[in-house]
Amino acid sequence: MIKKPKGCEDIIFSDAKKIKYIENIIDEVMEKYNYNYIDTPIFESTELYHRSVGEVSDIVTKETYDFTDRGGREMTLRPEGTAGVVRSYIENKMYGMADQPIKLYYNGPMFRYERPQAGRDRQFSQFGVEVLGSDDALVDAEVISLAYNIYKMLGLSNVVVNINSLGDTESRDNYRKLIVDYFTPHIDSLCDDCKRRLDSNPLRILDCKVDKDSKIMKNAPKILDSLNKKSRKHFDKVCEYLDVLQVPYSINSSIVRGLDYYDHTVFEFVDNSMEGNANVLGGGGRYNNLVNELGGRDIPAVGFASGISRVLLALESEEVELDIRDDIDLFLLYVNDTEKNYALYLAQELRMSGFIVETEYLNRSLKAQFRQADRLKSKFISVLNSNDLDNNEIKIKNNKTKEEEIINLDALIYYLEEKSTDEVLEDIYNLDN
Ligand code: AMP
Image 1 (cartoon, rainbow, N blue to C red):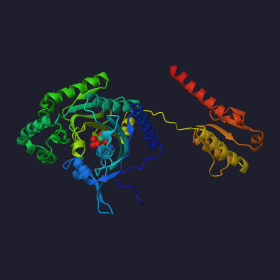
Image 2 (cartoon, protein in one colour):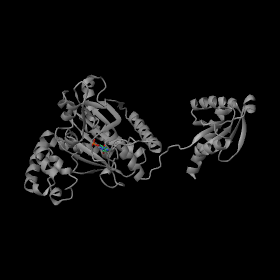
Image 3 (cartoon, rainbow, N blue to C red):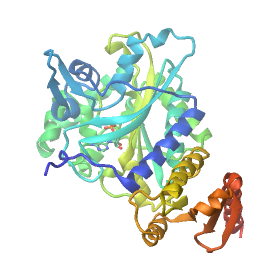
Image 4 (cartoon, rainbow, N blue to C red):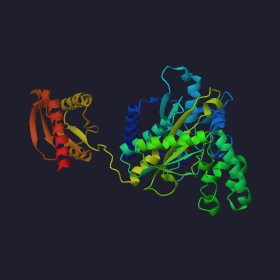
């Protein structure tokens, strides 16, 4: 038997329904914030990721799926969304459009060759936003609050934002020197990755998962103390706007993020009900130099990305009941061919009017059809009968109360609409009491 690749998932049945639900909420919230959906290629030239994510980042050195296409071009399956969006922004000259800043959102599969574990797959879906063309701290705060509100709309109540600032290039250069001076005498006591990072990317030492609780790490100089005046002001403004938006955040100086392109604000969303590293639902930050580094103009930008499967794990951890239907409105049962034709026709009419309708596909006995209707939790059932249908009538039974009525066929849609309204009202009444 051929099996799925390691670190990949078949998303099926109830999980698939939950993911569709999550995606609908994402679309709804993005629409309210007036973000435009963008769909970029799933593979791009390898060079794009080397220049954006960073030559020495973990993603580029260890995790990309690279291949040479039949034309001899070096290609990479996208490990994250920002690089492709920024490439598209430059290629489509979005900086020249009338509406600025450009507000974009995406949702789709990403690929990283990681060691698979809970919440860490080799193919996973991320949704995210990028806002290009404004350096106002309001945008940083809006992006953070947008993500926070998606989690909240989904019913998550234990999500907090950890936020930090890496400052501008000047602040970061100063801090990098401080950090190298600080860690150099202690380097033998740190893990192999940290030893490597001291030369290549010293800031990443700070978010080392191995050494995070060591005294050396805890006493390391804080980047917020190295911010120059301009960077400090930007960070203070972001915090002020988050207060206005009532987003709960905590300042955490160990957040540096794994991708090389960030400056100023960086943030992560953590679900406190979850254990282990999979409790990071998403993160992002400002990247004022990336557009320029990829060959575009000097355009400031900010964005975030969140893993859909992590959100699903968080919903399970917080035991959130999603408002997803697991029943159907009507099951049409039949015996002979005339009734079968009617079932086919009526099912189509009712489905096009918005009802979830099922009928028999396997020519089973009536008894087996009743069982199937129960399995599907059909609210109503109707055993089609040629005589009734000739009289333009249909017998319909409430599958819960077992009450049965004969109604005019022309009134069927109205009847089902009325019954579902009654049910909604009853639910509201029960909630109120
Ligand atoms: P990153 O692009 O590394 O900043 O990751 C942003 C978010 O994407 C993380 O917080 C996760 O929710 C999700 N994510 C990243 N890598 C994986 C993965 N290998 N499997 C599942 N989700 C992931």
